[in-house]
Image (cartoon, rainbow, N blue to C red; front, top):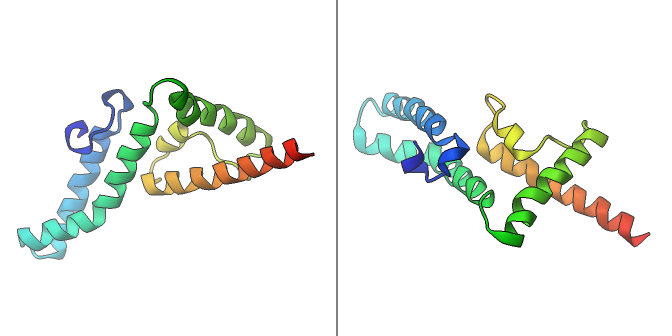
Length: 129
């Protein structure tokens, strides 16, 4: 799983993604009556976005120095503050969201982009006063 998805091994989602891949490959084979070529095309269509998003999220957690703080530590701090103050508006941090069964990586990334935008708007509005 970690070999094909190139996520950080301590991230723990490569093997889980491999299991999801098996389910999607089986569905793709069923959808194409077992024809391997079209099944692989269908499988790639179904899984490419999720795999790309997982790798991007994983890599964002492992940047060195100040960039690591800005991309990993600061968002976790902001998520903790905002999700406690307004849990109906802001989601939990990315790591917690990745543990939710049935929540796709793309859904997590999309939600975190929305949260970041709202967080920045609130922070800039507060600083502008």
